[in-house]
Image 1 (cartoon, rainbow over the protein chains, first blue to last red):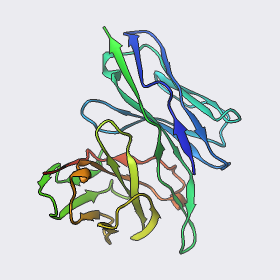
Image 2 (cartoon, each protein chain N blue to C red):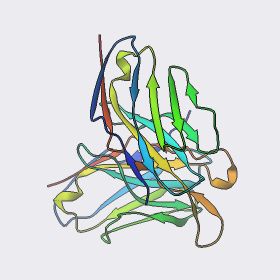
Image 3 (cartoon, rainbow over the protein chains, first blue to last red):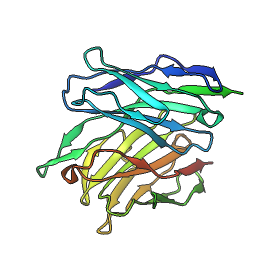
Length: 122
Length: 116
C-alpha cells in the first residue's frame, strides 16, 4: 500500500515571502501521479498542482511550483509571494491507475498525507 | 465552469437512521469518487465508480452502499448510522483513463453529516 507523509503539521510565513511544504511518499509503482490540494476554512478541496511521475520537469502553476525528486520519493510545494488567501490546510496526495475487473484501466483513489496547516501573516 | 454538485449540504440524523447523499459530477466526467473526512483528519477514500461499475473500494463500512446511475450521478446510502459517521463527505469526479486528459479529481463542496 502507498503511504504519504507530511512531516510539518504547521507552517507560517509572512505575506510576500516564500514557503516550502514537504511531502514524501512510499510506493513500488512506476506509473503514478502526485497532487497538492488546499483546503481553506470553507473546507472546499481545491487542486493546487499536479505532477505526473513520468515527467522529469517540475510542474508550475503561477506562484506554485513543485520539486519532484522521484528517486528520493519527495514532492515538495513551493509557494512564492505568499498571499493572505493562501492560508489553508495543504494536503499532498498520491494516485495510481487501477486495473478494472471487467478489463481496462481507471484512475484510482487519492491517498492523502496528514496535511500541513499554512498561515500567512500580514 | 460547472463544478461537482452535492446534496444536501448539511444533514442531521439520529443514531440508527439512514441517510442518502447525492453527487452530480462535472459534465462529461464519468468517474466518481467518495471520500470521508473526520474533524482534523485527511480525507479517506470510500469507493469509486467508472461507467456505472465499482472501480475501487476503500474503507467503506458494510452499512454503506453506493451506486452510479446512467446519467453518471452517484448516491451514497448510509444505514444504521453511528455517532462515528459524523463527518464531511466529499464526492469528486474526473474524466476517465481512456479519455487521456489526466487524472485530476475535482471535489464537490461536501455534505456535512451530523449524527446525534
